[in-house]
Length: 323
Image 1 (spheres, rainbow, N blue to C red):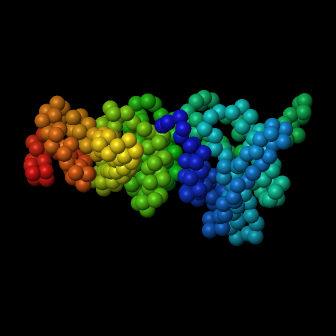
Image 2 (cartoon, helix red, strand yellow; image 1 turned 30 degrees about the vertical axis):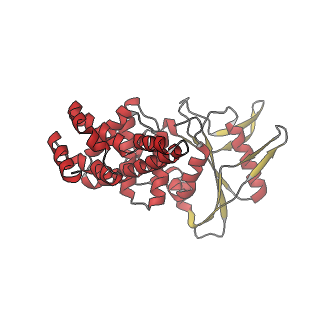
């Protein structure tokens, strides 16, 4: 993850695309009452704070109709990637202005995605006057760093598959969580576009180092055949995207440099890393033959090597496929 990660865009894209799934997961009471076919996303709910000289926009506001009733309500989702002391107040101000404009009941949800602190955040804005509490504005809080990813691992929901990457986990669990995220995603059998949204979200927030990546490939190889195939298809799409990005960046600096950069981020690097992890230094004898493989052969090798049990299997494969 880079410092320029657009957290708001990633979360808004995920929740917009899978809004009914979000409700099922974190607002089941609202999900049970709303007619999901009636959902309408409201554009750019802007609020001007005259005292601070700021103009802000609510992250996501959705209008829906209650089932079997001629009545509507709003769902307001606000995401926060860094802790802010006045966040509860902001939830209240947005809610008050939404009600002032639409005059509809409001279901507010705060999704807190920062890694720290892990102390529970308030679920209401309270305005006290001495010992009297004339105003309490409550909202549902989804504080991801306080949720255990294991509680969501067997829930067939694309939002769960994505958000597990931001839930509480130990450092040593990162590889396991990423495998489970993609296993769940593969089992959902979404179309390519939706799969890319979820897998891109997971890869952004669970970017593995080289050691972790090798462990990830080994653990993925232990999955059941159908799940393994689905996960490897997702990983292969990442390889292709990385190769294309490397080539595009490199071409701006010269064709030769671009080819080298594309190779560095492409399939050959990942395949060699996994083979070294499995068979050790003996793989070096085949390094040049592997690097010389075209992209289509590298993709095939990335799938087939999961079935290799000894180095001879690799040599035989190269003899047959590479000539």
